[in-house]
Structures are given as structure tokens and as C-alpha cells.
Length: 101
Image (cartoon, rainbow, N blue to C red; front, side, top):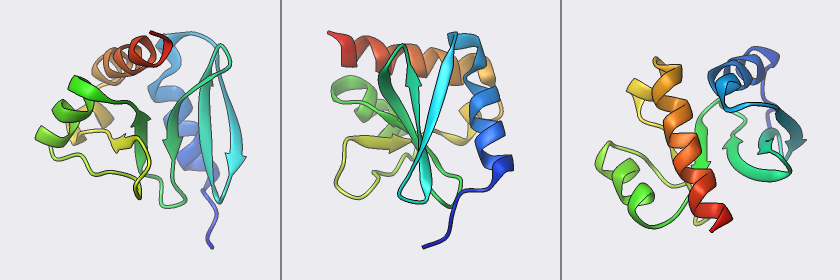
């Protein structure tokens, strides 16, 4: 199993930096990103960024070409969100809102 690169970790942390204090923990060759103790994102060993979500946001991510991480409730970010931290953070906030409801 390959391990996530430091560059991929830095990119993901920077992408979501406007959410507030984000922490990470390495797991299974990738990392989980946490906001205030809640896992909201997973970055796989190949650097793909996924949001933990369900319902309408999951459907929207699929409509934008998102793929599911195995059969877990994680869906990949659309390409435009990888290039736009404002959009990435908006999606991250929606994911957190769904998770904390």
C-alpha cells in the first residue's frame, strides 16, 4: 500500500484552511481531515480528496462526476472545487452541516 505524499497533505489542508482549525490524522495510507473533532474529509493514498456526506450533497457530487470511496459515505470533490478553495470550503461546510445534524 502506498502512502500519501506530504504535498498532497499540504494541498488538502490549504484547500480547506478557510473552514477554520483543521487537523489531520494518517490512516490506511491516506489521511482523515477533522474539523472540531469531526471527520469530514478523507484523502486517499493517491491524493484524491473525498467529503464524508449523504443525501443531497452526495447526489450533487455524483452529478458533478464524483466517485464513491469504496462503499463508504465519502464522495470525491469535483475538479472545479480542487481549483477553487472558496467552493471547496462551501462544500466542506455543507458536509459538516449534514454530519452534525
